[in-house]
Structures are given as structure tokens and as C-alpha cells.
Image (cartoon, helix red, strand yellow):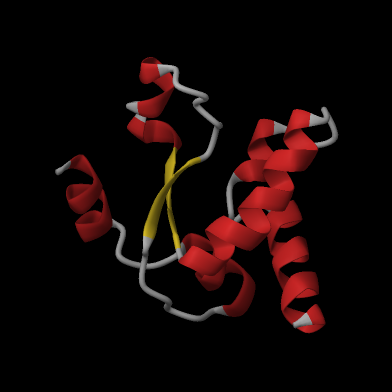
Length: 95
């Protein structure tokens, strides 16, 4: 129910809009900060973002790996952050 309400209010992937100016429908409600089972983090809707499947599986996965290694900041995990936009453009070019 919370997922459906969020998608209704945020129907487009913020990564696709930011990087490509392309209105792609939201498929995933992504937790910006990996919650790792922490229910407070899981339900913190201030840190939810609208994502397409590609951004979630490709861009966000790489950003989260960097974050886990201490090589990215929490702010970088937003799909409309400068770092995420740069990575999106690079990955799209690579096919």
C-alpha cells in the first residue's frame, strides 16, 4: 500500500528524468540508504526514490557497492545526484 501510494505520487524514474530527460515509469521504490533490515530505515519515506528497473539494478547497484566501500557518500545514492547522472550516461553509452 505504501509502495503504491508512493508510485502514484512519484510516477517517473528520477534517474531517467535527470540523466536523459526521459519520462520512464517508476517500477521500483528504492531505499536511497540501504536499510539492511533496519525497519526505521526501511519505512523512512524521506529516503525513498522513484526508480525504473534499469536504474535500480544497474546504476544504484554500482553506487551502493561504492558506498559500502566508503568510496561514495549517501548523497551520491540519489539517482538524480551529479555522480548518479554521470554514471547513468556512461553506462548507457557502454550499452
